[in-house]
Amino acid sequence: MKKIINRKMYNTETATMLGQYWNGIGSSDFRTLTETLYKTKKGEYFLHGSGGPLSKYSEPCGSNGRCGSEDIIALTKDQAIDWAEENEIIELFEENGEFADVIEEA
Image (cartoon, rainbow, N blue to C red; front, side, top):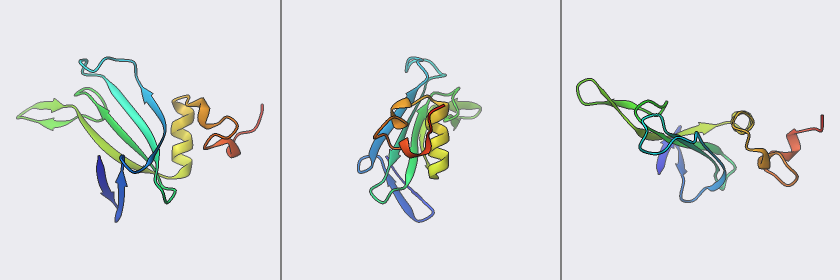
């Protein structure tokens, strides 16, 4: 998927996938949701998300209905770190991970 945001092209085919979250609900369920964190060649972070009609990626369709959809959302580094922490993408914080430099041992 490609999307232009603030005159920048975000493309899932040319960016590096860093991590993925899936809510564990099958694709036939209206609540299904998948998000993938990417980093562009120029160091920009973004999410590609998709979900069913009862997910945050739903959009209006028909006269009164909702349909599943997908979107790209540009993120700052801090937002990408917050997303990875919220979704427990631990490998991004481990040694040699994308965000290893922001974590300290408890």
